[in-house]
Length: 182
Image (cartoon, helix red, strand yellow):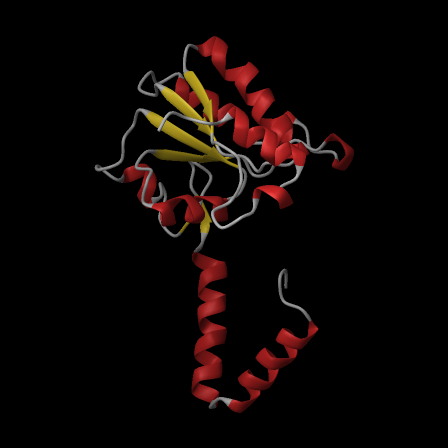
C-alpha cells in the first residue's frame, strides 16, 4: 500500500495475527464495506458514501466559491485549517503530458457546467506547487477567466518553522511575490 514500507507492513501483519479473530474479521468487514459503499460524488468528484456528498449538500457552505484540488485527500487537508467554507471540485489528478494525462483525463467539463449555473463568483486553485500542479493551475486560469469568474491561486512560500537560508530559490521567490501588508 502507498506510504507503507516493508517494516510497517510486517508490524501490521503481526498485529493482525495477534489480535483476536473477532477484531481481525471486524477490520476485514470494515475494509469490504468501505470498498463496496464508497463512490464518487456526481457533483464535485469527492469520495463519499452518499451522493451528492455532504460538502455539496451542506446548507452552511458558501455557493460563491469553489476550491479546485487535484485529489480527494487534498480536501481533508484544507478542511483541517477551518479557514474555508465554500464548495470543492476534485480534478482527479494534474496535467502530466509525459504520463498521458491531458485535459480530457481531468474532471473539467463538470467544473465548467457548475460555473454555468451562475452562483459561483470565485475559483480557488489549490493544486500542488510542483511542475504538474503549476501547469494545471495555468491551464485552469486560461480556461476559466473568460467565463467571467474570479480565478485565484493559493499562496506558496516558506513553511512555518522553516529557515530562509534553506529555502529553495523558487519557494523563496514565491514567498516574496506573495507578501502582504502587515
